[in-house]
Length: 112
Length: 117
Image 1: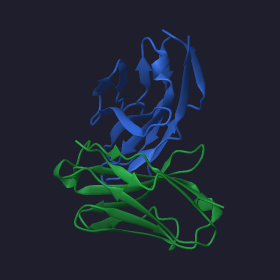
Image 2: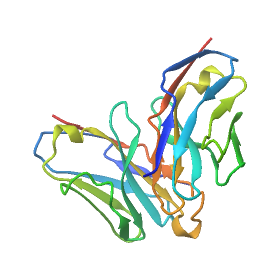
Image 3: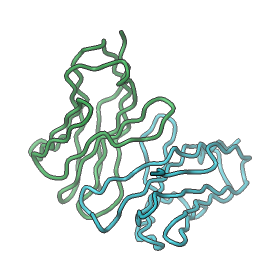
């Protein structure tokens, strides 16, 4: 079945540091890929998405590129801020279905 | 416009009792999903509705779990004879559904935190 593997947290960075959160997937067909973010005390929000190979999703300075050859969708940001502290979830929607399959989440803490 | 809403926000119950969790999707969204998030884990899919029918119930963990949706709107997730392992945050999401199948974005509610004592 479909699965998503993302790097274990927590990740602690200093403000303005570069962020990478790795995500790889296993899926049949051609999935769509998503990053969701959960800020403290809030619900899940879509951060960005990509629906086909080589697509780049971007939002709020975050980017992720759909790499079919490496089955990856790594999340990056050039300069993180304290306000980026949250839990980040990588997810996929399989080509033949509607449900989202999530990774276990990566907690990011950004310090001054 | 209004987002997905869920009630109650918190529910504490005793083992063996039944509970009902409610979800109000975004108006006009034909697809509705239930997920479960246990402490320190990712989200687990439970059930998917398209309109009032449930073409995918594959994530329901046991026959104690059931869900229904009426009027292509409100959905209720019912857990009978609750067990301690049912303690989790139950999340509802909605989307435009089959009208935009690929990359269809799911919008999540704030969740119901269920604690079974």
